[in-house]
Amino acid sequence: MPADFVAREGNLPRHCARHGLPAVRQHDFLLQSKVKIEGNRFLQVGGRGVLGMAERLDQHGRKVRVAEVKGWPLCRRCVRTRALWLTVAATLFFGGLAAFAGSLIAAAVTDGMPWLAGVAVAGFALLPLSAFPFVLGSIPRLTGAETSPDGASVVIKNPSRAFTAELPRS
Image (cartoon, rainbow, N blue to C red):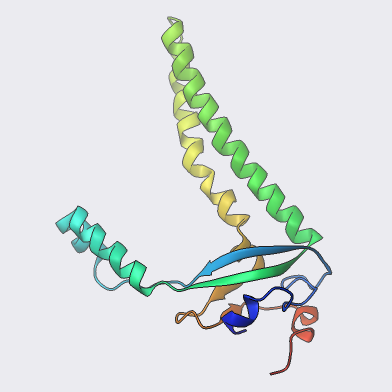
């Protein structure tokens, strides 16, 4: 679908692209194109450090394209899946943060509780683990949509029949 088509409110079908079920919510979001950066990451970043990283970020910034999407249809199943994964992510993150900070505070206040170090390490480990359910609940992952490399269109992986049936034939 052309990027300017999906950027206008009301142009998208009223059925979920993934499941074909009627939409219960429309969601606005931005889609980024996937960028292939040239060069060896180890040689650029490992060899030149901050300058190599800055060069890679500059290259990424020049190549990435963003498409605005207005009113993407989400069915009840997608909304529930997104809420579940974001709840798991928030629980892992804030639970890990509370365990880490709480055990450090408790260890500072009390004496003779060496097991608190294990709680702190477990809490610290939960913080980066929260990224995985966060990605599973992301809109691009739920919808199966991505921007073409040039940013001119939005590509949907395996759209449902109900979704494609409502698209204009031009």
